[in-house]
Length: 181
Image (cartoon, rainbow, N blue to C red; front, side, top):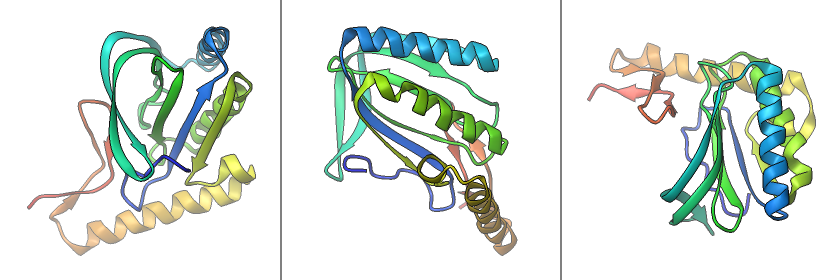
């Protein structure tokens, strides 16, 4: 992905996405579609509407912050996944990610389905799926990536009692492995 630096540990399964909507009507349609998807699957969501917010972003492999108004929706697909933040800036640009490996595999599949459903509203949308499901549609490949993720986590945990995880942060992001020292 051109502008996204992968921000997690090497062991996680994360879906990264960035793009720009086609316009104001596309924003309203995408939001309605996302809300309908949430209601269809019983996913809790909340609207995002801030006059001034800071969004951490990456452009050309460099960190940069957007400051200004943001609108969108935050979705919680499962208690063991990170939220999906469809949070658009004043230019209707989005850049975010969601970690899924601790939730059931069907949650990852549904997140991909949601992004595919929203794709027509974007002038461009790039998705990098560390489980490769978005790109391939291959469930076995996704399951193999998730299994390897847990094998690597287990390797950490048997090395030393100083390693522990996963940990959910206050912002609802998840950290795979923490160290006590």
